[in-house]
Length: 614
Image (cartoon, rainbow, N blue to C red; front, side):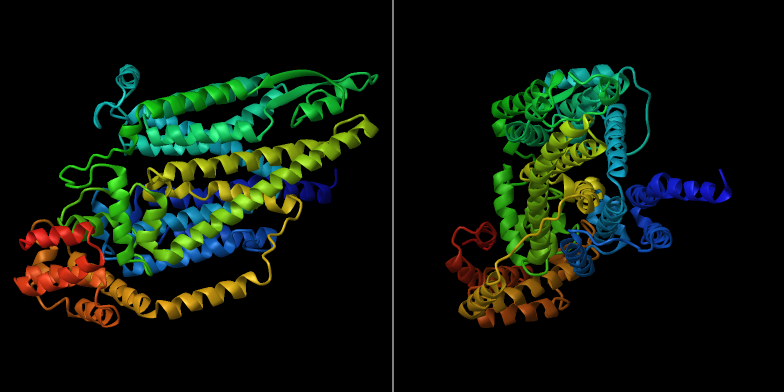
């Protein structure tokens, strides 16, 4: 072998095996540094920049375009705006319950998640993506082991005595591991998002008849399932249970492996190479099949989840907020959060700002009660405004549409390739690649579905440190996109002009209400920035600030809002709060009467009226 061939081989090895690991490792390291110590600031972003520069030197481009670039970049822009206008910008906010209550800390987490997204999305072959699926499953195993080694099984009460007893039994044999404790709901949500990838790894291991891989992935999946169960996260149970049922109903779950029969001398060549998608494909090539049906395993998980949730439905929607007054359930919390979202509809109230905004301007008490609304979509709306929420819905729409279309195309491709194999007598490598890509897309779709269903009752992806892996399933599909049949989302040519006309008509029809809501939004943001920026209980609380003239800029916005809509609820409520703090009870009553006229059932208005004795 001459030196030129050696250099070419080394280059190929570097491009195919070494650089993808280095690329993802740099992004993961940046995220890990922010996870451990977000107070370090923007510095870890340098690792992501280094990865982009290296990608440009190695591949000739810093990143390739992906399907989800526009919604992700729009989401990032709204996150930056939300961090810039938040009241909790000072690094001292990172010392509260979690660093995610610091606006810039949460922004760094989003940066880390997007940096990891592009590192994964730039994987260049399906084999590289399959390698990452294995690494991601191992990460899930590490999360499970870490939770088992560090969780305090009695610290948050006993939801299910038998699970607590199992946890305590495990704790007797573990060492005392220092470090941050994962909240059981966070651990349960993360494991539920990762478990679908174990399924596809186990399917491939059985299809290729690799006993060691079957034993390894079977054992690790059992460990992760056990840990997921021990978290007692009912929302995670419900999400994975529902997705498991949907996955079974929508797919073919018999994995086929075997040798070609009736072809002299070909059996050994075919053995171990086949990954068939269904019974139909298996019969098409006349195999002597050995089948392993994954349905029983998934059905057990699904039924266990749904039965437990059905027996504990009240507990699922209950929420414990000490001193929370009227907030007795998640439904109450969602209703209250929706009312708060109106105050910050256009711009959002700021990243990580929900806890103090909710306590101060809905519960009307200047202390912490809950860290988020227990709903993914509400939290995005409250913190990043309607544009941030729309960007995430846009991302989900494109992802789900593309994933479903690609799965359908891959099924057709595999059938054609297997039919072609009747001519060559050998099932070729393309069938294996097509099947792997379909399974990865299925697992990614299932993972996102788990996020969304769990996100209806809890907010793990956006409201916890799991935010760092939020975009991983999207990234895997983006990495596979260049290898999939081209599919395009055709929007009727009249749709965009019609949408513009509709928005314009709504604006003209509700112009005064919209302009009033905009000014009220600006005033609410300004008020929070003034009242809460230097918050410290009990020395510096909002009521103290309201007695001063520092709120003049916020008051001016509220007065502007009332010029366009005298009954604007937000403006009237906020001016009433300020008037009450200054002892101007008659003015406060007048503002509240207007707010009450618009919304007689509004909880904040009723509380303020009670405060002045009406």
